[in-house]
Image (tube, rainbow, N blue to C red; front, side, top):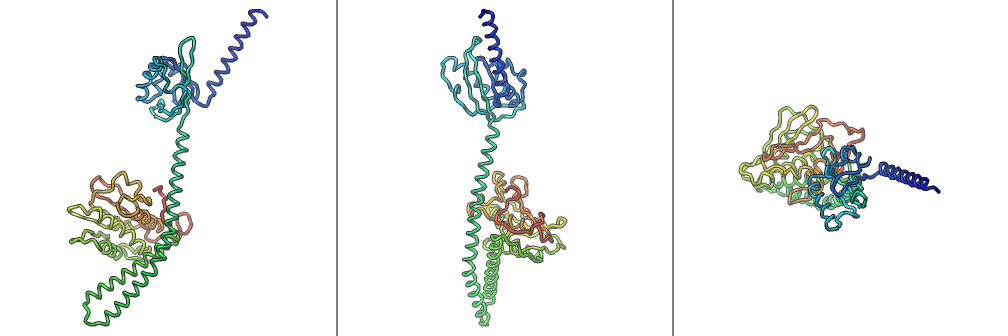
Length: 399
């Protein structure tokens, strides 16, 4: 075979090899960038263009630090120099998660593997870059799903516990009520008995009856039964809530005030459940103002179209911004006492009535404000056409 023919074949093989490498380089799913020992970009494939938003022509001959965040860019050339002088490999041949920077300034995670090649033009480094954002998103979704599963497991256990507690409490509570009624009848037969004692006994009977109603409603809530709606006079409801929320406070002067708009229509709702929401909000507010020199808690009610707005405000320190997002999640209460169920259950009750309960943003240091909205005359069915039913912890808004 002639010498020229051998040369032609070698050139042809070299051309084929180069074409294959170019095809692999530009069709690879991962980004590939080649730099020299001065950090200048020698090659930048199509996947890198998509990953970083640069055209290859924008970077060829420029320092590779343009696709790195500032803190990486400052250290990169030092790493290369250190390797060239000492031969100590800190990343070459080892995959590592690092941060990269898009043309628009967005910083994102990538997996970087670096190889080395000696060429007639000097030492070169080949970096293979893989975008980690899809994997991170999957990991985040998995973590959230696991957290939701754990949350629902706890709620399921709470459902069973709540039903069991309600069942067990019914019997002793009924006995207490019967004893109080017997004492009341006996006391009334004694004409010489102090009327104040009779009044206290009557209040105790009413409270025992109210406790029984609460347990019954809680059982309905756990068993996902619809609320027992009836016509409720708003002014009377507010007065009762303030009276109950003040019990046990030990304050010499009343802390709570009412501000009820005139001529409000009756509210069609379950009075026991709505009282539970308002009393919970009022007691939370009372605790919030405990250290204030001039303590003030206001329950105001007004009409907004076909709804009533119950707003509980206080002049306490307010809700810390870092706990606002978790206020209505079960088991995330910021208070030292309790398990963080009060607001979660309250929102569930409000939504079960076709309304909602939310925290209102206020200026820092001006207290807290919670708004309960309820339809004046709710439809029998919910907005999706299904009957309104309760659930212990419902997170329709993602809370």
